[in-house]
Length: 325
Image (cartoon, rainbow, N blue to C red; front, side, top):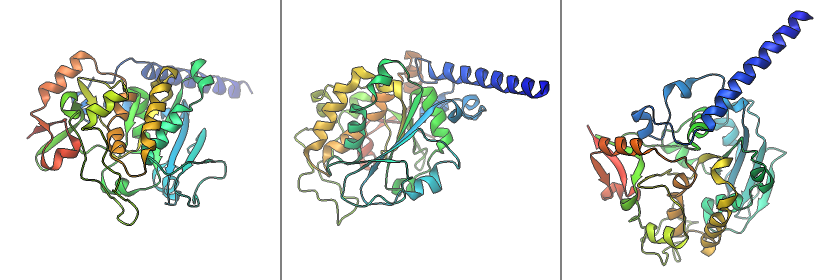
């Protein structure tokens, strides 16, 4: 009996020590810039990336899914680790289709079919648990996902474990990051002044039978004008960008003083289903939810880049820092 009590005390002590360290990482004011190669890609240092135990034991995990017409089973079968405990699963269904593959305890909310996943995310953020926010109970990570695994198949993606560790450390984690194209090495960070120039006036249709482009173009000449009009407080002079619409953020990244921002975005994206503003919004999430860079990190990133991209293949990633080898 004494040995059992001693073992239990040791387990509790280890848990307390590990929780304390993860909380210390979580509470840092700036992104992890201890490794420039990792910083370039929106990642974190190797010691935190591989440190045990897994942070999933110490943080509440909420899964938010923007659903249209795809079965959701692949999320549990292919992405989430076996046995992971989710604090909450919220599915926002927008296309009038049956939700297939959701767990029995999932909350299903029906929304109008406007603004794609970005409208869904803004809607959820605008209605976040204000009681928890006001009580500073902020040890929660929220994973935002789409029902469509298409980009998960196209690009090399991070694992759930990697995504969680990056989010705990940096306040935000992106599921994908293109690491190399031919001899070009693009960054997670974009030069804000060039980032502002992005526009997509020609329309976009991923699924030809579903995605209409008759009201696609917005009244805004570019991304910067749109962001200014909505008074979006974006990180600069280097702005992180997460492409693909799948990311995680810590609850403290969107404390109650941002509610008005989320509501403005939600209202703006209600103009239609397939609209240019949704592509603008894709490019703001990391810059809104991530911890900031220290000035020394900005200098290091700028010294590393050889190019600022915005032509040909890179028009859709306007402002992306890159270097050539």
